Image 1 (cartoon, one colour):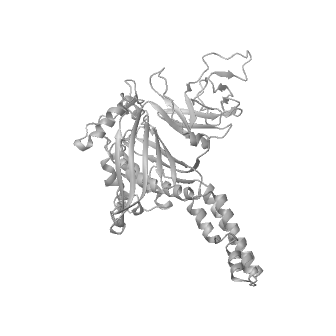
Image 2: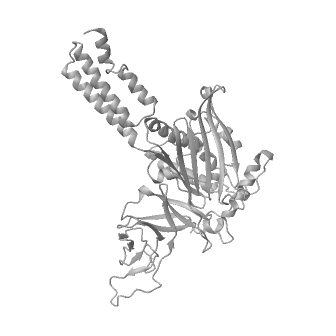
Image 3: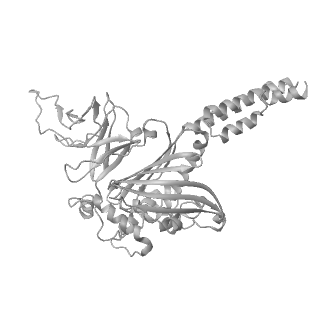
Length: 481
């Protein structure tokens, strides 16, 4: 075979080598289907090239070659389509310094001592004076959409309430009601059966409509009539952006503000790459306050994320080759610009600096704080746009459930970057948790001029408390019985 013929065979006939085309497909951030197509073409041309050159490929090697390709393709497919989940319990983050002092290690042998030690520490903690109401007014994410299948009911306890959340078996519509049956107090979310758009009590099979909470059937009633007072509270709810939200407001008749929907998430153009989920020992106001506390970014999140989340060891000498740089500003809504009063904004630019000179991995972020418990972080990266959606929901007066869900277009590059982003954001968030889990709420903090945004933030956030909001002491007493 002439040299030119050999080159044409190995190059796939178009003058570009298969390996080069495979690399180019990856660089161009194509989809997995396109990338695997290039890979299969590479295998085919490589084997044909060996055969046409007179070098027969042994059958055993052909089989191994094929198996390796199949396994690689499966692993790529699995990595490409499987979201990553980073989940931590209440005692997992921020207590290692105490456990180390007590000589307690992870594992079954130390589980009881671990829980006892951490709970003792939580009881001894001075949480502060004049703590704001623990359950503000606004929209709160109480479940992720994927956690509620059609025809399923779940009991959800948060915001000082006990809810039953169920999805109608016919329409798929989600309803949120008070959990307790007015008959004899059974919890509708524990054993209740969904029938159409109604929830059937597990105790005596009374049925309550998801539309208004009215009882519509008492199966053993001889008269067939249902008392009008046989009713449970129907909560205003909606499903958007991968979450089920409930409108919580202590003052009746207050209209909920419209939810900001991410069109690319709602219509499926962007896909879900993964999430993290944490339980945090703090007042809800402390968590979004970080957006206005721009000074903490360099102190807590400047050190290299590779050094981990334990702030005792986040600044080792070996990690000083690279640091995170942050430029941030927080903005309260402006009446002059006709901004909605319940939405604040944070503008953030992140970059990674090698030896404090070479700047890479620049990410521009616009974070919209929508009420007290929901944040949309719209990001522009080198691979294109993405969004992280955060919900903060009070489970107890000083326990918050925080979830971040990550969405972006489905490409090879994003499959890698988004899962790295889940890990990196989780590490950074855990650094904050180590502080939140042990700080006290300071009602009148000692602020300097550079902290003025914190004061502005607290003034803005105060609108989510009402005169009738449940106080911290009352909420705590209800749990101390």
